[in-house]
Image (cartoon, rainbow, N blue to C red; front, side):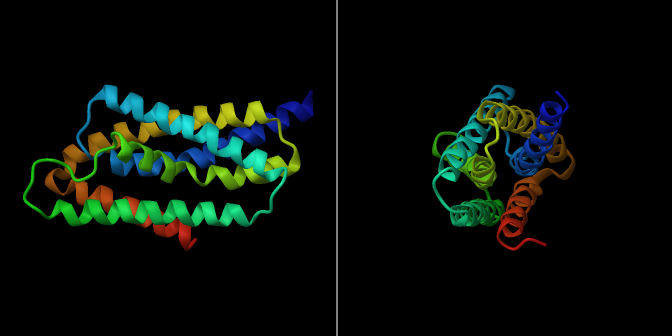
Length: 184
């Protein structure tokens, strides 16, 4: 019984840590005007990506090397840098509409960029034989809740910094992407 609780606690900590990516990026993305319904949808999409990525990692971990984990982390970093640069560049143009909207392809791009780092964790957990259902449910739950928290907090911060909020949000995404590629 103790080992089961220990494993659940460990997996919850991992899920929280991975979900903090979604919180951080959600904080920047929350500065783009959106409705609460859209925030709910984004949280569910990011949460579902945090279910599929570690699941794919677990499956791959049973048959592949850890090299794929590095590729996934760098890909996520590059995506965040590109989104961030785009948001910063467009924020200096005279326009009322935000440059990046987490809708359609933008939502898929956003969810992919924040969930790619759960793939290498899944890869490692697959190698060590972690309980698949527990992993994916915890990763999905924490990512969903932390995405909502980041988006809602970003929405509040936007009101404080006004017209520069999109540039600030883009800068956050840019820094986070760089952190994925160059850990500091």
